[in-house]
Amino acid sequence: MSGGTKKNKPTMSTPTEAILESISDGVFTIDMEWRITSFNRAAEEITGVPREEAIMRLCSEVFRCSMCGANCALLLTLETGKPIIGKSGYIINSDGNRIPISISTAMLKDAKGKVVGGAETFRDLSEVEALRRELDSRFRVGDLVSRSPLMQRVFEVLPAIAASPSTVLILGETGTGKELMARTIHSLSPRREGPFIAVNCGALPDTLLESELFGYRAGAFTGATKDKPGRFALASGGTIFLDEIGDVSPALQVRFLRVLQERTYEPLGATRSETTDARVIVATNRDLAELTRSGAFREDLFYRVNVVRVQLPPLRRRQEDIPLLAEHFINRFNRLQGKAIQGIDAEALSLLMAHHWPGNVRELANVIERAFIMCNEGLISIDHFPEELTARGASTARSADVRSAHDMLDAQSIRTALERNNYNRLAAARELGIHKTTLFRRIKKLGIALPQQDGRSPKTSKQ
Amino acid sequence: MRKAAFAYWDNRLAPVFDSARQLYLVEVDTRGIALETQEMLPDDQPAQKALRLAELTVDTLVCGAISRSLHEMVSAYGIRVIPFVAGELREIILAWQSGNLQEDAFAMPGCRRQRRSLRKCGLQSRSNLP
Image (tube, one colour):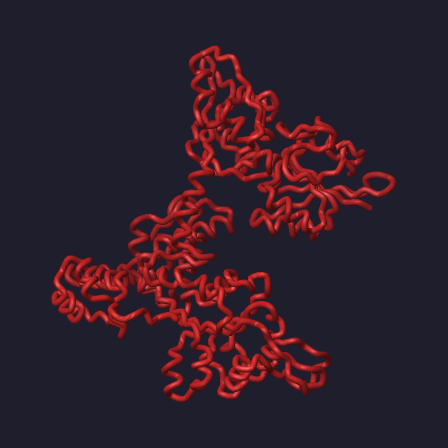
């Protein structure tokens, strides 16, 4: 809001004018030439334009709304005769601030029913937006979005992890957002101004990966005509993210160990060591402890990378996040594709909730992106989903009897209660309103896997 | 040679640069206007709009209302921004050419000149020079 707007005291000739002056919604009217004929006190305050400067000027140049021009709501009303109610957009006030608003429009007619212009009311949504953002921020860190107790525990420790210089190991199935987590840690860290360099160690053969990571000197091999800095050198002052660390060869593991221990490495063909100050974040979707036991991953490297561990749960274990993530992706694709999809209908959401999501959050994002191709406006429905999703959902629904559906819900409730209570069985039973022995019986019957941690001992999932 | 971009809609300067799609580009040399062309602006992220202006090697952007963040982004590419301007496209081009764009007649409502030379809207970085 402008704050600097001079308030005029117009003569109140009618009760209607007095009411218009007293309300907090901005109101203006226009004639058939799109020139402003009245402009109330709230309109002055929200736009930062004094009434005397607004009157008889083109409404688009006074109002300065994102819809002005080809998407003018008032133009649509005058063309169709239908009012528009509560359409969202923003205006740019005199200070250059974007003010979120909702607008409504109506036609103005004279006593004989002839259209003589239009009226537009608009509401400043700045406070609503600020409140919404505050609420959202509880479930959001950077681009990470979650309501799940499992993820909330990760969110709680994330600022401390970001602030420390220690190596981080991110574990999670494919598509759980390991790179996004690494980027978030980088963006929360004191190195945020530095570069973030991501390398997929599983995508390159050993020799190529070595030259990519550590660089080479001119003459190191045929075709090396000049020096090339490696990714470690490029990540100087920032963060290097090594994805799929579980797939690197034993030979390269030795070199990684040296970098992590001594912060030094030799580019191919170099005679002197280089030092690196890049923070290292590694990730894998494989069971690194098991790989270490089987001898495929060096034990000393495992202990070196396993300093701070972040475990990302698969989407099927954070089902409560599906509506939130679906909304997040809808908002993102609306912004990117300039669409106005309103959301997802109840039936389609139920289908998403019932899906197993082997591809995790990435698969969900792809399903929503595909739905955006099929759906142009309104709500996303089952018709906009790929066949494999609907076919599986339909067959599941057909084959599942009431008993198995009940068991599924039962298992979901027990899992959620256990997670919320840090796997303390007694606390979970109390929350579910059942006796501890009943809970144990149901856990056994439904085949719910429990971690070693039982909630009575201190947290061990992250250090 | 100087090159200015005018964000327009319906033969007037577009009221909001953040949502504008059409650009009118004018190149002038010592003899006057040398070339006039039209371009489309991307309708996505503000950074893409700023980048497009830089790609078009524009020296000056003349536009209607512009959000502070986008203004700063465009300025970061070394492009001078003359914001909160309103009027017929042709009149604005001529005023820019003759250095008269800072006159109150071209100011958006609520942005008239205060004191000697500064208009009150947006960032205070405009110059009267074309």
